[in-house]
Image (tube, rainbow, N blue to C red; front, side, top):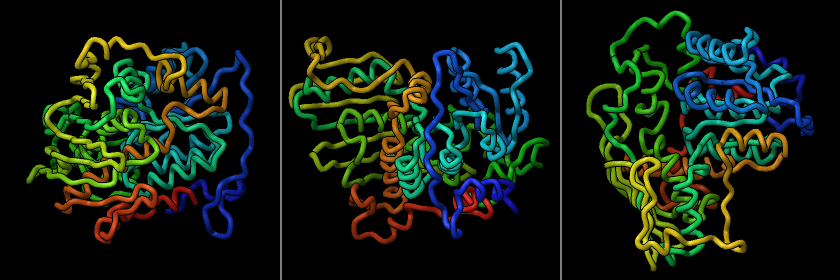
Length: 431
């Protein structure tokens, strides 16, 4: 298959001598106070519309001008929402995100695709000089490192599409821990929803069926192995299939494990050891671990336990503890003094904002780093990938967070990346 954008990208200087190189950095346009930032939506499924699109449509300093999805019904639905908001029919529709990225009048993109498309779509957007807000997690450790390095060498803004750093409970908890209100941090516990039968938002039918009209299933699969179409494989339920994601550990873990990383001050690094056990369904198409017990050890002595029983985050220090039960539950503490403590002017104040979307737009204008940069996305995703690899191999693994490799374990190291199906390899997408 010939990728339609090859000639365009050659002219843009992205390909040189057959190798992928960074484009020449051109300063982004300066936005005036009345200039609206133009947004293109890549991926317009449930979360892409009900959360991400809905957020941008509430913000006055941007305008969504394009919607793209491999499922035409979803792309057209997003267009209808956008046009209704603005009272016109101006929103353009695309079914191939590469065509959307060729538009020079689009300043930034919101990527809300399935997980296995996050890095390819974000990488190409960066190379096309678009600012990027991208959903979590990455698919592999190697892809995450590639994307983070690419963003670091780019002049573009990258925001992880994750709201936790603007959620009061998690921000407050992190500031209390980072400022020593519970003494020396010793233990953390993260709870995630495990068995996912109650989480089906869409048809879980596993039976092989004809591909629906208007759905580019081959592109939806992308670099993942080819398998016949079934409704239960796509859209929301892709999260429970290892070809496209990493189960609850990577999906919900991107939230709660990231919060633990923030509280531990290890956003740019990670643990040095992982061990644990897990189980996955023995029949059916869903094969990601849905029950697990994992323990991560950090170089600073902090221990992180991760379980699949229910959602929570708990931190224990030498002088007390903090807990948030459920998603955005009440912040609890071992004493009222900890809970009511005031963070002084000269203490640590963690970067936050009203939302990830609002912060993204502010950073597009200021050209300053967003509150959740790609390196943090990569490091949290890596922790989830480490846990899945340890459970698959059924053994304790030692990890070097500087070299980003498992120590003395060739088998585990091969699992940092995956084979990719042609023609949807990352190299082809960027070529």
